[in-house]
Image (tube, rainbow over all chains, first blue to last red; front, side):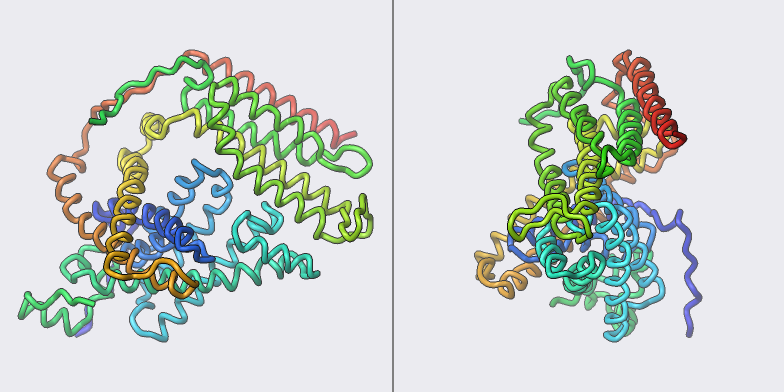
Length: 218
Length: 265
């Protein structure tokens, strides 16, 4: 039996649960970035919250979580305001991929990760070049500057270095979001806008007959 | 026990301005910075007016009584601006060389765009630093609500700032617990990357499962009820907003006229 196609509206997207997920998403972005710097990883890893909120609650919630992240971090360092569009686009792209059920099998994951990374690079590179002249003060700026010193064009230098790190960043962020979603019990998942996509069908069928066997440990 | 101060009384007149008035100043100052940045001075067409213009920001901050806090926050911005200037001036090659020291060559077009970009960033970021250092977050939230924003938006904003503290603490607890279990958090890149997962996944999971309870709590307390809300915290206008608005608009008009005149001539 084919389930009828789900209709989405922005108003129902922002349910009570979604509203409460936004602060958590922003805080996870923040803490993820901090953890990455404590563990001295050469990546930002500050979009994990945006990605999982968009995967669970859809594009608009993801976009709000992304924008709010940069607004909050911008209070301490206003340079982050310039990158608000990048985080919004991350939320939108992931959210629409989630609605298109692009996170169900492994080959769809790969396509999704590539699309996520591409969207970030395309939106971030013009801001980095036109507003900051290619350097944004992060660890990757040194590599960008070195590439420029070696004679590379500023656009090539920015897209090249940002590209490599963005792809790695997105892979790790996506894997973490997926690990989290895999262990959320189905009774919680159904409450999220896009949550049903991640419930394994046999498990869901078994859950109706035998409700005890729904939580699956790692 | 820590108890939140309910009302705010600021003695400094500039710091006590209403948030929307400060925001107008920020917007107009940014517009002026962009306009001044487009005026080239002298032979090299460098946008030198931005440099004295930047003195406005520290002066404003000292007058608002937040000198030390401003210095702390602006350091990151100055670092980025300096980096932009150096990279642009040394690494964007062009025909004309302004200054040479050994193998270091300062190119004219690079220096021009470097000065423009770095001082624009300093000016615009600096005025935002002033606004956020003189305004508390709950003042911003209250002002947003007064200007007709939905109370849910301000709830999300305030709740976000609290959630960052809560999750920050939780993440340290989880990391210590995982370290006690034997997860290595120091070492080479792969070891560190492996430590990242067991620290973050339980954190997010715990936060999401707690959310369900928070939904029930908020709904049982009538968060969704459509009625006039009462506030514990009220904002007061300092009474000088009109004067500041007029000064800001007058300065902006002067800059715009100057820019237009330079275009015509």
